[in-house]
Length: 289
Image (cartoon, rainbow, N blue to C red; front, side, top):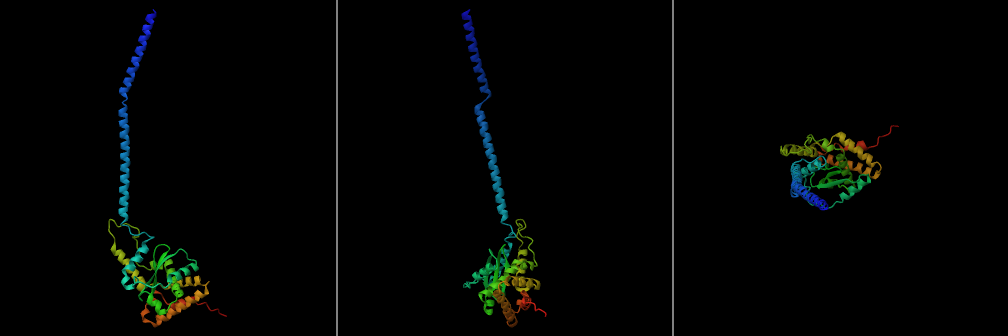
């Protein structure tokens, strides 16, 4: 009996052991770990491939944007600088601004005047031109920037001092600040910041605008109302500095005498209406007793 019990227990143990192995073997057949590793690897490669596609697509889009941006007209912050400098290049032969010039000390004198009057952080370029065709002029540029032109023959004929020149430049600075030059252009640049990739650059519009620049600079100039506003602005700025105010008043008298006696400057009043009237606008009103 005892032997029978031992035999039965041994048999049960062996059966359970064998049965357990067969179950593990069956599971091993169902779960192929090498296949799992393969699938995981394939999923990783697939995700990596998708990521690469996204990166390539992004790069292509950015390249396209860069390519298209090469066909953009300048935006509103840089357009007027582009046009003014373009016009100066086109008129270099007539204006003769690109010849070497001695340092007249005008830059420092004008900078000191601006700061004295409370104008800081203003960027400007002063071009001394060897031509009487433009006596003095302010051209629009980038925000807080401007281009100032001054005729060397005009300076010499009037024997202008650095203070005289600085005040004349200040007048032109105020015209630029008030936007009078752009206001007087008959052609309005509605293409600022637009893209010409498909249509191509509209050279006709650019040339028309350049011609308008010349029209304002050489022929049309500024009207009486604009001249009045600039003169009154100069009056307000200089009232606190009697010496500067007196220099400006005398400067207008010099210019008035010059244009009345020198035929070379007979067209001055077409650009800057009547220095004589400017003098009258500045004169204090006589009190009636």
